[in-house]
Amino acid sequence: MADGPWDGDLSIREPPKVLIPVRILEGQTLPASLVTFLVPSEVVILGYHVLPEQTPTEQASMQYEERARDAVDDIVDVFHEAGREVETRVVFTHDRDQTVERVATEVGATAVLLPNPTGEISDVLVALRGVVDTDRLADLVATLLGAGTGRVTVWGLAGDGPFDAEAAVADARATMVERGLSADRIEAETTPSERPVADIVARTNEFDVVVMGEGEQGLLSVLLGDDAERVAEGAVAPVLVVREPPAEQA
Image (cartoon, rainbow, N blue to C red; front, top):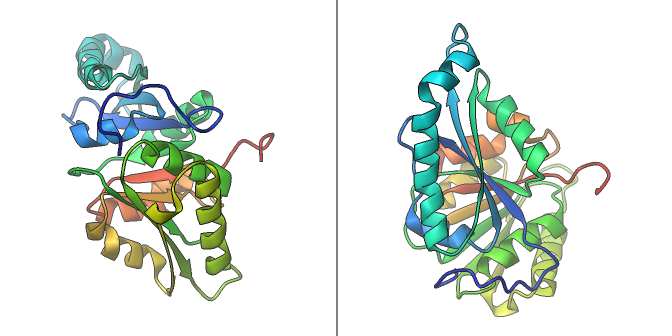
């Protein structure tokens, strides 16, 4: 974890971008330690409020937008104090999940943060339970951890399917090293698992942040209750969901 403000020194071509959806009218905030952890990445704050079906978005915007923007600005100020400029969006919506997916696509987000409370961040769990874009995941983890002393555990969960957990872990570890993360800061594990979601949740109290791939079903399914969302709901730690790249980049 970086110990001070971001100085712009990255070992990869460009920093990954993290979208942070925040329930802006419900008092949701980000822990200062999580802000510090995310500072090496590009950050987009999505302040959103889910409206009842019968409430027009135009009406809500007129009534709540100033309050919502003030709340977003409070979060932005914390990033500014850490030395990071951020992009912001404020949205009143009837469908949170479609809004998050749309904005993630518009801004080209590498990952979406599903916030949970956390203390100081020094141990990160990368949970591999299926095929994931290793380059994007490694860029994200190496960028966020590269400037500090934090450690990462790359954990492959092997089920009955064709997923080769050992190969995936080895590939992810090697790619993180290529991205500049010291090999002695990376632990590699594989475990047989019939219930990977439950197993990941059970270990989240050992780590400060969990990083997962969104999987083949895409971000919308994740937010509607696929594995990463179920992990976020049961986890002690925040969860970063690494999105699949656009088709033209895949």
